[in-house]
Length: 507
Image (cartoon, rainbow, N blue to C red; front, side, top):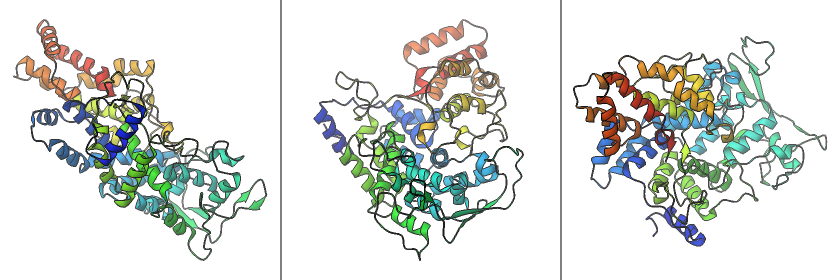
């Protein structure tokens, strides 16, 4: 049957047409974990998981959603996603710029700033990259062509780069469109107030404050005609008013209620982060020959987003309340091969930051990151440090696919699993150090007066957000009782839990 929401009706219609039977609903403890990781990037605490499981109140799920959406971790989690997209990294922006830009993103999500407002600030801000955080968008994208490509990709979900050299083979964009769009961004200029970079050879490295300014008139030549390209909005015939500020005209056009390209790209990105796959997939490849898997559904979520002031929290809440989101990942006979119509949840490996932060939470022992005070979570780090010292969390993040942020693209983050990563998890010095750390959760449990059963259960609740099954409990207690080294046996159990599929993957 259909779930109660319009989103579910649109998903169900699609599944009926394809004769796919949806999987059942996911059990409480899996759902809580999924929700917490998706909205806030962190595991539920053991106590929260126990309370949720024991709660019989019908509105318990909504209460958890509201609590997560109001948390600081929510704002940090979405600032991390946007820092990836906006190339928030030290080489181009310098450390102070990275922190300023990241702080602005985090505060924007905390305040429920609409994505239209966020886009407007990115496109129109000028002044100091230290005091006007959004100017770091242009600081990172230093020429008209890069600015045009990045804006099209991040804000409109369109890949233009093929049209730079020839008319796009799979899309409607011509080389003319490409240069006319890039010309919109040709009037931006920089005043490098200071540059204290260490490396003379690296043209990309700027250390110091810069001013982003707008020239009276920029010009960009179209190489095929050798004439200046007349600035034009992408896919639009609207001409520019030469008397008015170009960038404000751009922001007005981009975020206008009738510009479905923007609302669809943004709604699709949120859908992708919650369901593991975009309605248009990849998320930055909207084109005629890559249609949405469910066009009415995309139109509906985009309309909902734009009608509610582009409020990310609002759309997340609508999506996570659906059956489509709450389905189990266990396939049935009919949907075993469905990866794109949302008949079941997609199992995916957790990204680097979530794994590392989850380990720290379970062990109650923080990871170390070069240049940061002990206690910062991986999900809170503003940029991408490159000089990772061995035995630190930075190494782990790099091996597990945290992007270098050289491209404005979701595609740069890798969630593939390799043997090298597996060894790093299992035998890495950093993990070892945290397992044996004095005062961590294993220390607390080995000195606890609680019965062994309860101590084992506590570890399961912390790591997997559930109680151990009777067999798991019996086996763990047997092994611990047979040894004199309770601390060591608990450590082995923790190690096994942190390396199991249930921990490393989101189900």
